[in-house]
Image (cartoon, rainbow, N blue to C red; front, side, top):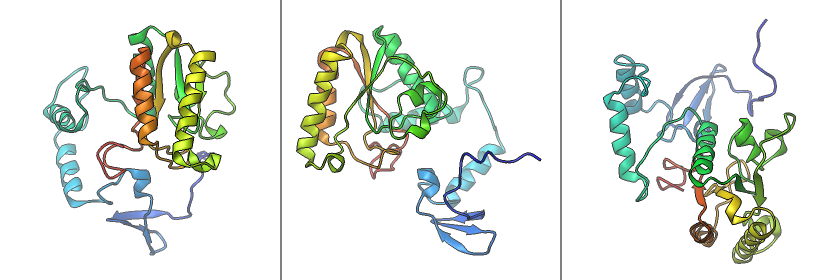
Length: 246
């Protein structure tokens, strides 16, 4: 008999039958308050009537239009809507199936655009489970253990997680930026560094926001050395932090 893999365990014993707003309803007849919001997916609540109506209308019209084969108006409308909220200068979009695929596309683009091999990641970051994305993930060994060798060219630098070091945020930020400079001097030369990738808020690494000064420091160094700064907003984007982007 076929069965679900036992390696992805459920956090709760709930068997959900339906969702409504912030609640899930189980086969046991009980109502549960869903603090996870579908791991951040159902930002308007479960089965919001406007979302349901839009999905039903689309499924009855066109289920799948692969945009390297055909074009359709909903895709163009989505591009226009994203253009209203994207930062100035980000005006070219590429749609992917998952966060891991998006991260790998960003890695590939950075290497091709700069002609440089290395990518710097922040300790505690989560970027996905596929081979290249897992090679950039340092939030836990479970994401990268058991299928070595991983992708080469990945260098890890500290993230300013003040609580982890027992410091205040300013001290942790200064330390993280100093260590990044040391990394660029001793491990990955700027001439070999294609990009640094960072989550504005560590996700699987403990929900730790990056400080404004740390992100500004990354931007300054990227500009000075000619490498790219990649912000992984898979978990922090689309309103999950209270703003559209983290």
